[in-house]
Length: 405
Image (cartoon, rainbow, N blue to C red):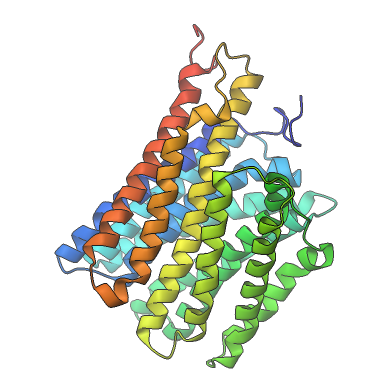
């Protein structure tokens, strides 16, 4: 049986993907408590906030999604996915906790220990996936973009660890390392992976016009050239990257608004909100060296971009995978996708994310820090509750885990 190109023989076991997703939810929930506590204790740091979202939420989510997408979308099958995913998860999880603790208590020793395990986990997982991607004979825009995104992840992780070593005085050029680390991780890894996935998901999920093939196939090269230019200390050097981001956001929003399928879809609103946040991030990115507040708002708006998209996509992916695996395992009760996660809770996740965006943008004027912190906590809790409860539907109904069912 094949469904939208997804067959049981290609798809990894549900526990592989759900393990990363559930961990991402729990780590994001942990971070939503750590951040306000750090503020109350006057041990606040911007890197703490950034890495709660980029590592705790985004890295674990994207690794889980890639274990699912590589064999299905790119035809890059990973043998023994359970064992390899467990090694990947163990290294990343084992590194994240001391890494987060290092930021929290300002311990460079913990940061180095956590950074080493995170680097090892990133290298193991990325090289594993790149090996499978390189072995395939033909590339789609999505699989080609994934390959480049993984290369940028490796670069960003290595430079990030080098940045930690620079704080010990072992390496010079700390400012350059920080610039390369941010560019590689935010644009080379996160943005490129999102863009690559959008080349397939936007058309498939929302029945839109496809992206122009020449544009999609060459997108990683366009981004690489723009990223290289952006490393110079000039506002004008960042213009090509800013224009590329704006152009992709415009193309995506235009396709979503002109979609052929006009039915109401909550996932669509997550995409709208995410790409609006991405658009807002561009002027802040251009002005980030003019005033520190612009740099902060760039990180906030870009963080809202990928966080919103992760929430919307994970809610859809978990619902689909639970239905798909139970259907193919011959489960006695197979819920509809709309039944796996309560749709009212999905709407609540959307409203909370939208309110969080508004509260963060208005923070400059209101100074009401308690409001975005409360909405951040509520968003993390509601989202985590939905995902974990949705995953438990599978484990409760699956004959593989409950032979008597």
